[in-house]
Length: 344
Length: 264
Image 1 (cartoon, rainbow over the protein chains, first blue to last red):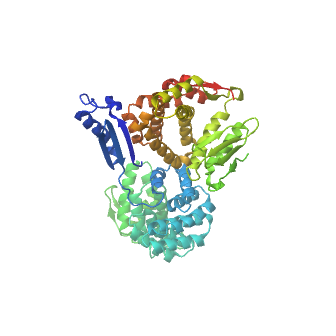
Image 2: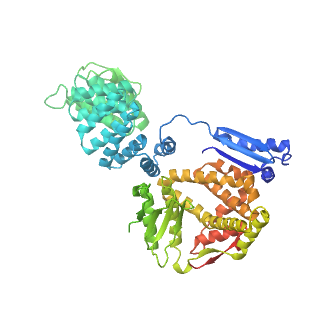
Image 3: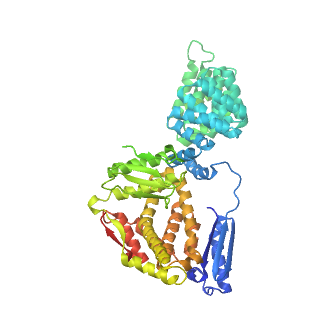
């Protein structure tokens, strides 16, 4: 709200708004109560209020606090931002469009409209908006990097890997610690079969955001693709970290699949001609064991076995024997690997 | 049918936002006649509607200032026009002055300024007061409805709407000044202030800026303003909701005898 100034006759002030004993125009109590009334109502607006009594009139003036430095269009974005955060896109979109019509190169409007178009499958439109957003956001490295990442995503959806890669590399150049850009470039490199380069990017992404579970699982997968023997243990440790942090849902399922692939590979390791019969029978025993077990106990067993397995399992050493808190008896490393394999 | 846009020199056709063009198209479809949008520098008001006549089968929305807010002014007039064209032709009426009320205002002005200005000047001033308050009565109630309708139906305009409405509330504050009180016939002054108060409370609520209404709450207009706003929100009982609003407002403001409805 802009500043305001107005004047009211003391006699016409609505006395019912004032406390008893302060309703007589012209009196000191009236002036005090009227001042309090205006101060109370404008308090939430900040700024500066002046209430002056002169010649039987009340002169009121309110000035807002000087605005903090902000870019053009900031007031509108202050309204649109919460809508976007609450995913009220239908309400945000027309406001963004209006803002863009008023300021055709408004950086935030271009970026957000581009992202919306991309999410809604209007990919060519998204690409054009986001190309403009990259240029408009040039003064702010972080914003420009985000625009590049969004452009890359739209390009990827269009199947244009060249533009996607170019945009991601540009994003990393302006903001080397942008974990999303690093992770996305890693994925693109995996698709291109450049696993070593992908691993490097995923490691950089995790360096910038150590708790990024998607980068973690992507790194594990890329390591397995690069060399499943050499990187087996590191991959398994990474996957366990994901499953501990995210035991349910799509990410967990993907992690379990990858761990199963590790377990399968372990079981086949020394049997190039077929399955190990001892492993098959141990897996069958594990299946019987888990059958009918309630979920809580099942998870307890699985997490303990998983924790033990983190230190590495010697499945080809027949003499190994371990005890578990959650299951009676002693267990070979092969049996533990089978429990993990079947449980996952 | 495409809305006909006749831009003035400073406002190219594309300056009207797409949402406004869609609205104009809607008006044309509802009324069955083309709508022309014209910029006119010397227009007294910000914008107005000239309804189609038998001779000129075209509605005109005329706006004064070239620039961004014009999109809202045009949309506002289009919203009002949309209501008007939906009234069955045989029921369409126009608000006319009544001689008795007009002369009453004029003679009041003559008395106020007796010996200070000529009778001709007093008559001219009285006419201006009378015409002014009738115009506010005719347009403001339906206008509050149009503001709310645009807010809900054309959210693209909310940014412009907020700017335009706040600016109107600010301009109206002048009417609370002591000088205006001394120069204006009491009935006109009270009605105008109440109408302004309704606008301020309406904008405060619509835009979520309660302080816009503070001056009028302080001046004792809150109850009346809220009653006037409530009238604009009531479900219409006839095919001419604007007429209902105007009549109910007139009753609240003591202006029922100031006008008569006549067929065009």
